[in-house]
Image 1 (cartoon, rainbow, N blue to C red):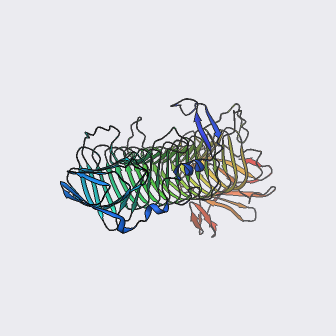
Image 2: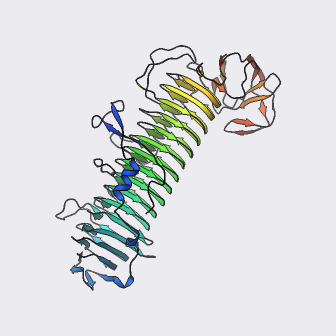
Image 3: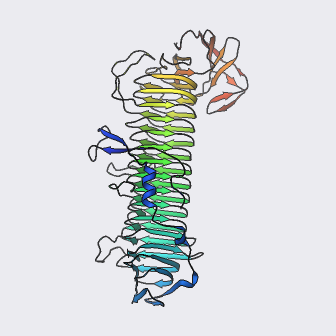
Length: 579
């Protein structure tokens, strides 16, 4: 198996709550562990499988045939009792046929690998798990090429072992591989469950489950495969929240389509995604009405979420992507629709690259008790409240635009160093309850039209040292960048509200275009900052008119502006100009 660290050294702080079930504003401790999260997870899984597990000598196979209500077997290591097959020795068992009401039990109490090759089986078990790995040094289920395999359980179990609760149930580490198909119909509870770790390395797997779809208590690793889950609980789940290096879900690649009444992907500790085509629907989707007691998130982690790539589509009643700790996005393509936040972290959120399209959300990006840093990527965010919100922090004293000061216990910041960002929201556009810092990239912010919100909202300081910023909204709460900025900017509050689609155009006294922008909604204030603004230069502001240039997200490039009405002019004489 590929090294899960992927040659990326990442030192993530782990989150330790001072009390269980704490509210959003409860105190927490961030501790840097000697081992990184990825180190701990990789160490936990290193003995699960090896390359030799996936190869064998066909001459060593032990054939087993199901004949409706009886079983034919030859060789040692497996014994049949009517319609129950018990495997007690390591070996490779090729199984085929139909079993109307029976099961496979693996009970090998010695070291060694038990390899079950499903070669076209149809097993129904009315009283327990059709496949039950009770004990084994190692266990692997191989889906033989070009075969269809079906496992079905009953709506209640009568087994003496109360732990058994899934159509495929293992008390040991379990691997599923191969190029065949597997259909799991879980009428009692879970579809596929391992009480230890679970690795899926291939196959076409379909799960219908009354509770969770696929669960590895210690970890769930998907190396490849085509996986479809429809679950009335969680879709993919790992729920060990006690031991370091457990409770994680890793997706290396594959095609996943997960529909869940609860969380589509839920890990007690960490979620790691490297690649894959991943489509998730949780809680009935973003238009559903969610019970306050139900968690229906697309991706949910207890400590960290790391995404290195892949194409991820989420339609969720709750947050599309959520972590109770830190979230780091290195790359990837995201299409998110949420009944709550698009991406939510209780602590830090950081982006290096990627394409993020949030078509519906309450808040697009939110950090509750940390910072948000955008170092690159393309973002298109639609939100019914704030576009981007750093919730923590607070104001001790205020003032006019660009004059706020604050006292907080630590720094909570919204930092943008690069990237392309488009926001369409009904609350604040860029909102930080402490520091707002912009040093690069392009930001096109279209905030509230009517209520008391603003395009920029900060309680500490707003420092602009680079980038191209256009932010429109209401004039009642408008704020300009702070005077500690090193790039010139201005704020204009128009005398009346301008209609959606009404162009605002800025040019210098020689007619050189600085900005031609067509906001998609009505507005009465404009914040603009650009390297094109120069001290001592006089600029003219026009409204209405038209441009022959090419508009992208309302921003025109090239062409000629004409037909507008001159609104005012001003000369840049200080870092922040308010009109």
